[in-house]
Length: 219
Image 1 (cartoon, helix red, strand yellow):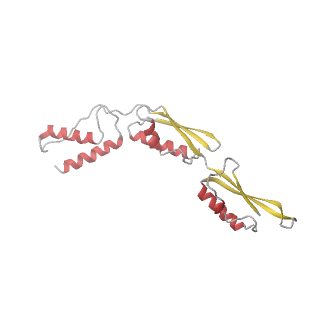
Image 2: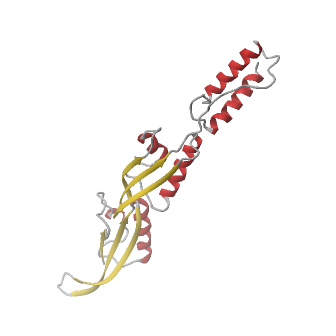
Image 3: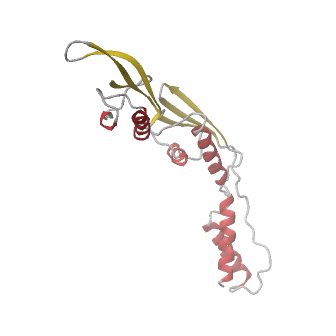
């Protein structure tokens, strides 16, 4: 048999994969070795799919006579890769920050219909936790063969801005008196991100509650 590799939808990888094959030219065709080769190529090559094509062939032996043989060709289909990531529409966050939040990198394997939806949910949830509960996002994928360009179309909407922070309740008996206690509580809340005139992330509210309770308990 003769053994070759081809990339029907793109070039073959730069590194040689031939040494990894168990099926070799001149040996009898073994279905078990073909199965092992397919598994190996799929795992180490980062391919979307690997197929084995077996066809009848004819070879000429050392005596010049023609003999029946087979041609074994491994067809390698590369995984789609990210070649560019863009951000459009972001106002309060930098493009770099949004790309970092997405977790995507140039050269990553990216499957449209799976990774775009997962990334959309991830960015949308992050924006919501930052106080942009009306934020919307659409991910556009421009595919050319196995090369993909991704664009994040972001509409942050209006953030939940903290207009006023008041401290109410029974502050009697706290060290330093009520006025000092109010100042301390506002300072603790500010340390957790609860700041007048700025977006109010839900996580900051929870963090402020826990921080205030902890400090009051230790007074």
